[in-house]
Length: 355
Image (cartoon, rainbow, N blue to C red; front, side, top):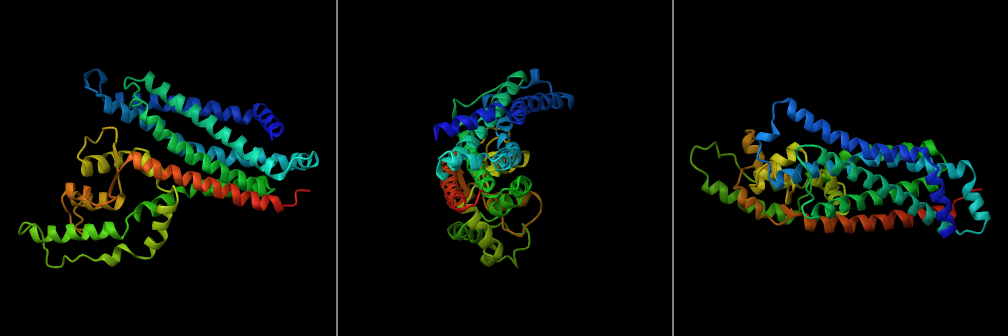
């Protein structure tokens, strides 16, 4: 195994494509931070006149840092099939077997190598992000290292993805075909995230929401709006989409990006509406999407779901979770899926005819 790893790392060091990706991973987030800082100044914001507290600085830092999770999967989907695909093209895998290496050693060394690439690109991106933040007037704040734990959760999910792409590349000889599959998988992230996020609730959460709904219906001020046809319809929450999206939410990391990466909508909806915190504070909790929408719709005039008090929504089991709890859940799922991808990929590779 050590001999194989030395060979693979030697190939990595000789790969110009890898070093181009590493350079881009370092430079692009740095430029992004500087450009955002410039654009904010262009709209007339004078940083010297703003009383920026630590939580605002942390939010900006996390906004730049966390985007490595969204940007790097496409790079991995291209690099891994091309790098491993050359093993088939140049006959490296056949030579390794002829030299007496076992298939588990060959497969395992490939997984370790590509995991190392994932760590390298992620660290380059994070370091570039932090330097970019330091170059701006916002500054950089890691919240006493807590932010690095959040970044580790994102990295662990990317490592699981690299195992999947490696497994696919090891069992399919065609580099082009493998790349198409991996890239298509990356571009499907948005669909998976939307389905899983929209159906993140369970029966207990809906039952507790129904109780709040009925209580609010009884205590609603007269003339607020027409309540004659207001009746809680539980069936609309458990439709065909729920039976697809909810298992996707429970079993996978489909919503990790949408819950961990801050966006303007999440800053406004998740923090200011549900938790009562300043919309530009570093988020301390995650609010599940269906209940954010229930409260948010009162501002858009959509009364299809009855509005209840924000503090009551906080009391629904699982509607609002801490990042610590979410990190544990996502980390466990990343490890489990890495094991599944590795095991399934090796079982196929073990029987594959590579000669």
